[in-house]
Length: 63
Image 1 (cartoon, rainbow, N blue to C red):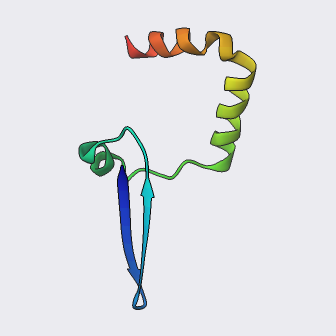
Image 2: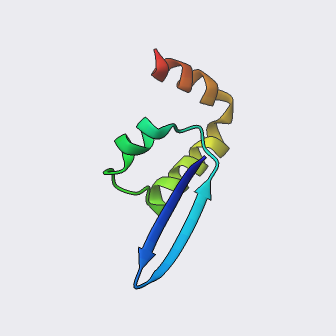
């Protein structure tokens, strides 16, 4: 789980997210650009249209 705690003008807000990231991943990715709506749509379309090939593609990219 990753937790984010922020303060703004005297208010404190928190957000928790269940994830497989660990602390080193969170630190490494903290400076990266956020994922945009277009990227989310493309990922959804790919998974919807190519789900039969998704596992094979993931295995290829990991090797």
